[in-house]
Amino acid sequence: MSVDTRVHAPQLKTAGLAMAGFGTFAGTDAIVKLMAQGLSVPQTTVMVTGFALLLTLGFTAVWGDLRALRPHQPGLALARGGLLATDSLLIYYAFTRLDLAEAYMLAFLTPILVALMGLVLLGERVSTRGFLGIGLGFCGVLVALQPGARALNLGHAAALGSALVFALSIVLLRRIRVGESEPAMIVVLLAVLHLMALALMLAGGGFAAITLMQTGLAAMAALCMVLGHLFLIRAGRSGAAAIVAPFQYTQIIWACLFGLLLFNTPIEAHVLAGAGIIILSGWLVLK
Image: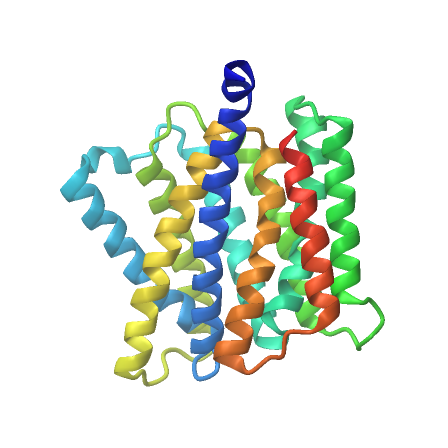
């Protein structure tokens, strides 16, 4: 019994961190979708990332060392930041055209891409059971999404693009997990995303008037964003990329809940069935 505990403890830790990360990201996504009903995606992103940068700087100043904000591998850190910034803008746009659950389902192609990239680029091994879990998760996506049931739009293309970009960022994280501080990785990402969104916002006409409620929502989204990246970075450092990525599937549970509570989106039977298959696939990948 003790041997099995030692063997599986690292994987369980990675799974727990990944689930926490993706859960808090779902909170950010729901708030961004809510804010985007009255503001553009770039302006929403500028507000959220502005607060997130302030939070990261504050946390680091109080509980850490501000010198930790300087990346040791600036090229790789900027590359990862650029990928995740692009991913964020794509999926935020998808949220304006699709329901949360539908956008997530398309983004859930990420684990398949991560497993293949990890195998080819990083030499990570994926067991037969792991491949079975990933394949089963993809089947769950198909069950929940029901391809062909509705017309496609640019939101679908954006969600698919985010899956590819996010997969690349997870694989790249395995290259920079040694020697790079968590605050540096987060602040570089936030700075790149903030500047990209600011450029898009200015190109589109600048700021619109904002309310106190929107400001409060941006602050809440920023806190979820910072915590989500912190959890995901630690998950990426503690286990293989092919273990981290499938737990993105748990976001469908949050998507259904947030969709029902915030956007009056009904929870449909086929979505629940697909979610059940997806959750099972995540546990298979643990082995």
